[in-house]
Length: 150
Image (tube, rainbow, N blue to C red; front, side, top):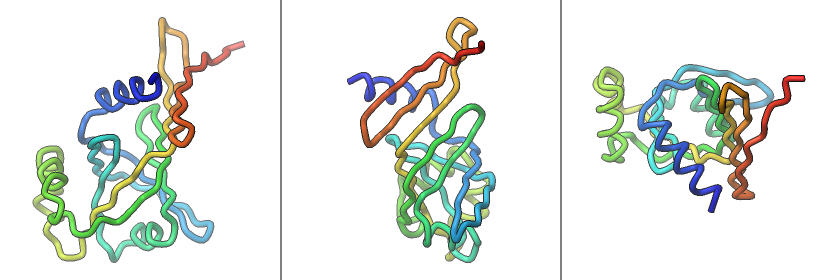
């Protein structure tokens, strides 16, 4: 139960919408870019145009990574269709990123993707001491390891 409780705490702290770096790869070529990300129920959602390079990478390699501040998230990405077909996503996106919503979400080439996390890692400080906090989803394992400064 520690895994679920700590993961719940992480997602509550994370909030619904953040700008994050998304890294994708295909054929040993890695690219990264800033994205407007929605977090809901432990998954991460974003939209992109199907004519972009990242879309091609996502279609060929479902393994992706997200990064923000001291947090790294690895996961499996899946296309869900057009963003306006998912009203819950569209409302959250509009609330968190109104300009992007109005400029892009209704465009015909936009596609919605969902990232299901497989691993989350972040650095946290407890009483000014650094710790590495990790979540291994497959093992349902939570670890908090003090970083040795010596």
